[in-house]
Length: 112
Image 1 (spheres, rainbow, N blue to C red):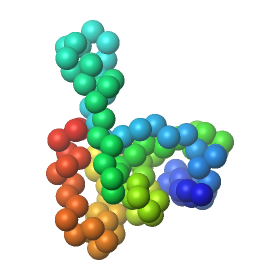
Image 2: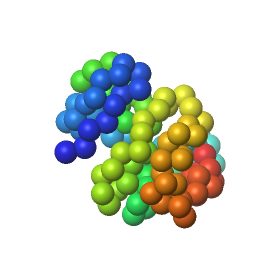
Image 3: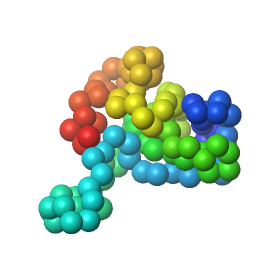
Image 4: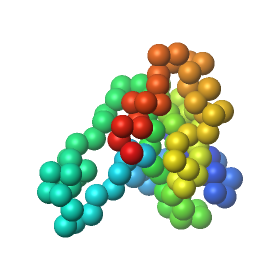
């Protein structure tokens, strides 16, 4: 079972208490914007094997959104951080690179 710590209220919650919100750090398009950009936003997502930056909501707790860095193959959680943060904190990036030296934040920055 996946257990994430909500950085907003500090509660460690099982995935049944949370709601996944998809990929983190993507530019959210609005209706009425460029049709191609809106189509890309709706239907094109990175689905990497390995480290993934995701949005989660503490649905059965404080109700706030946050981001999590985890490995999709092992379910290892590298950390969680505020959804108002533009990129993962240095401590989380260092934890990821300790396990996956080839991982780069640049892969995600192109989607912001």
